Image (cartoon, rainbow, N blue to C red; front, side, top):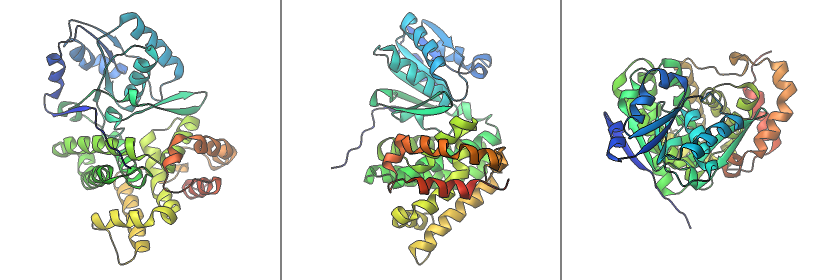
Length: 358
């Protein structure tokens, strides 16, 4: 028996953020980073309520300590809702703050990047002692997701590239996840197609496609939160905890290699996606190879690195930390929904392929 649910109300387009005013909140807590506090967006959202507080200490890879500080503010201020404004880190932090407060407080997500899909997922990622810990609970799923087009116009190309490959990784791993069903397949396939087709244009400065990519990110989030993720994300979390690199950039490095490693388990499904993308060939093996090569070509077009050496991780340091990285990856819950049982040797194969030269 398969199941699919979408409990998040999704509002999209220009001026979508005005929906907050229609909620008639008395007290709002806006969780964001210093950038959106300084540029006025956090205050703009807060002012839709009679009173508000802003927690603007969010940093990349939010720590357990930061969440504890924010949780204390939630308990003190007792808002009607918590608004997460920002990328994946802001949403992870806000989700955890509301969750650990012990209060029944709705969460409203306003993503400013097109990548994490966190605005519709049951996931939050917290960092403690150099290890990323995925928190998974249906209580983490926001009640409202606001996809505001105005927030997308100033996205820098590097962020478009990083977050865009996060969309592709979410869609591809959701497509092959062990809990996939026809509903998640439809969302994952369409999200992958939209992102793959439009990312290069968005990267090059075409603002007219950015809302479509933003929506594709949300679609991929709906898919993977129910179908599951896999080895790419498990390794990305482990590497990110060790080296504090952007999550999407790590996914860009890892995803083609993971396709090769998982082809024994998911080759037929990868080939089906390749054919739907117009990348298919006569055999499943060639279709999977075409899919991998297409990801590499797009990665190059977006000026993303192809190896860990290229992002500043010396081969010797990677080698020294490999055992710890693999241990963390195998313990990551994302491995549970990989299309085949993840082994230590599979993880080593991926790391060998992406290591680069010393």
